[in-house]
Length: 391
Image 1: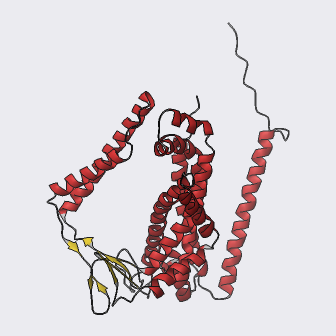
Image 2 (image 1 turned 135 degrees about the vertical axis):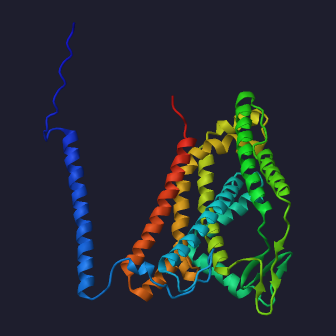
């Protein structure tokens, strides 16, 4: 019977690389902690000597100012924390819609760089070179001046069917809420589940047989059909709250302010130019033989791009695309230049009224840090799913 050798005792020695690494990490964390404590203590001491109040207790006090644009009602007598919450929702509204629109526009322009039509290629290249090289702040101001100076007044708006476009923004009909809309929403959820199932089946069939199947139109039809079925089961509500011309402004309906439209269009068009270059470089990273193989299988150019080139380029596209999403979110802070009430604008007003500059800036930093980390986490998860699985 063989005896097992007794486990070696780990000796603490400076010659051990692991021990030295642990010591260096502890020293680094200690130095960083001491630096943060020194800065915080020094700031608090100086503020106390100068009679400057500090702390976050002001968040429960009445704000004392109105907010021009909000997803829900806000009164000047409500607390500062609700004002900050409105600023956060306005920032997220721009960031989320901007990311979606930027992805669509940037992908189309990036793919358009490979078009066999010289005019399409030229237009896509011109778009990228023009909007990528103009500072984002100038573009925001350009769109804001366009909406507030070149459009007609609210008393004489441009009528585009059911839409009203004027210096007051874009007004559009919105449905009057009824139970049928909840049924329609439920139908859309069911339709998205069916579309996901259909797309998986189509991908598996393509990998098994090599025959392309509808991976977009058929799933889209399922989503729309399920939503329509839910709407019909809910009684097919059709009542709309339509905008109408008032004496001084457009009344009723939904509206998008010039500030929101300017920020959304400026961020989308600017960031889409960078996303287009990311998509172009990702497609060019795919070996040319893949395109030749797709042509040999009888796929047309659209099928070749959708089924062969883009799925392989996605692994290269996702990491730099994440950077562009983060840039778009952080660039939304420039909306304060045109008066859009995002979290930076609300914080500036709070600083002017309370003098709590450190606290308000800390809130801004926390908001952008949280949104950036959440975006990075989501994109890293998607990147892990799209990565090549090694054996």
